[in-house]
Length: 211
Image (cartoon, rainbow, N blue to C red; front, side, top):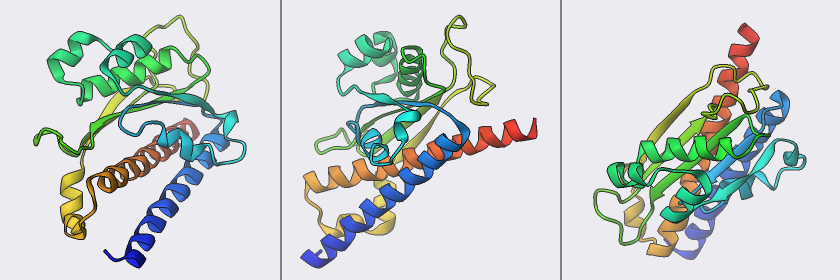
């Protein structure tokens, strides 16, 4: 990419993040759904993107940035046994991150988490692999009940393979540096997480309206 192409490339990324964050904020605010995040590979980017929206403090409780295994275990209660058995980049860890941060955030209705390996120098089998987890289940029935219409407790996850998507758009041929590729992947994951949050809020709002 030449300089002009690079500028356009990053502008598109930034615009997509802002649009996705605005959509999420509108959904959370209109349904009075409070969100908490647990971010590993995105390092707080999702919370930061939402933080640009006026009034978001009404529904964004915060974000735990847990890069290391030790902080995942100490801050969120992720099981070391789960990490050893399944790997830190796994559905199980993503789900435990979501339930853990929700358990510690009594004001939140919904928790979303992310764990992944964005490179460089990732093991080939993990390069570009990301798990997004979400939960409305605190795992402790004596804590704050769900109030926003997220009535049926759920915990689930979704796997992303960024390398496949990058091949489809021909990104490797654009010769991004390792550092730039990492930033691109963080932004791509951020957009996907925001899209997932918007979908979750819409689904539960539709269920509440139907009920």
